[in-house]
Every structure is written in structure tokens, then in C-alpha cells.
Length: 263
Image: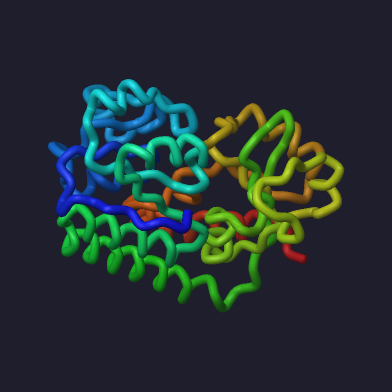
């Protein structure tokens, strides 16, 4: 946002405006210092039950935020709405992340660790994530990428295309994005999906909650494609959940590779 943020040394009253970063703050053992979260911050469950919810990720209740007297708010460029962030920044320190690559995510984790006095814990987490993705790379880099369409919404169908964190993780997982010629989150017509003839179609669990019942329509339209329900948090959450992403991607890549018709 082109600004400097003045933050007290080791802030004591933190509000998280992003679910994946809320989970990261819990991982860094900041239970007593996080005073507010959003209504979408469902993990950890005990925080969701017990901590003050200040609204959604794009619509804040400013009165609730004021009552909490925060000395730091943590947001994200994609998750939060710019006008609301700018309004908050008039009164509070608001630290923002902008995540498009794994490297961005690891830098964010370390920065939040430094900011909250959890540098060593964050460094250990970063190293563990790096090792897991290095292992993934050694097992997928020698194979040709599997073309994949990653759908995030229905009615209308929307895909994750280039210039997104999801696209970057797809590449690391050994998939090539069937909609690489488009940017961000385009609306996809069904005939476009048919024309791409992807090896697989990945249906995310979020933000749209795809279920088994949604597979039949797409399988009829794209009989040559392997269609899989996938855990969207492992493709799009950029905190400590990345610890589990690499192994998940490896298993998914292997399963799809075994199921798809060999061309």
C-alpha cells in the first residue's frame, strides 16, 4: 500500500482479519494476545467459539474493533477490502501481506514471527515447509505436468488462473493450469472447459463448497478428465497449514496420474 506501519514492540492486543493468518497466530502460541478474529476464522475451533468476531473479511464492525483497543491488526491484500483497510489505518497499525507465491508466504510467516516475538518458532516452521516442498519437487519435477482446471465457484463457474497463490502451488504440485492464458479468477463457460480438455478438474472445498453431487455434470461434459474434490485450504491458505500441503499434493498428483488416460 506504499506506506510505513508503526507497530509497538511485541503488540499485546492483536486482531486478525484473515482466517489462514489467524491459524498461524495460534500456531505461534499467541493465545493471550489475539483479541479479535473474523466470522470466517473457524480454526482453531476454540478461538472461533471464544474470541470476539469483528465481522467478515470484507465488512468489519468498526465499533467492535474500537472496543477491543487493538495495537495491531493483520490483514491481506486479496482477502480484505482496500477502503476498509485504509479507514482502519487512520486509527491503528494495520500490517498487510500480499501472497502470490510460496516464497511470499514464507516471508510473511517469518515477518509475523519477528513482529510478535516468535522469530525462532517462525523460522522453524519456514524450514519445515521448505523441506516438505523440496521433497515434493524431487518427486514431481521429472514428470510432465498434468493439465488441470481448478474451479473455485459454481453458478457461474469460476477458475483460479495465473497471478494467484493457487496457480503457483498448482505448479509446485506438478500441474499445469488449463487457464494459464487468463488472469486471476475468470468466469468460465462450460464450452471453454470442454475445449481445454484438461487431464483433471479439481473442485475446491472453498470458497464454494463443491461436493460429490457436483461431479456428475462435469464428468458428462468432460468424460476424458479425472475429476477430484480437493481440500481448498491446502491450495490457498498460506500459514502453517502449508506444512501439510506438499504431501497432499504428492498423493493427489500420483492418484490423478494413475487414473487419467495416457496420451
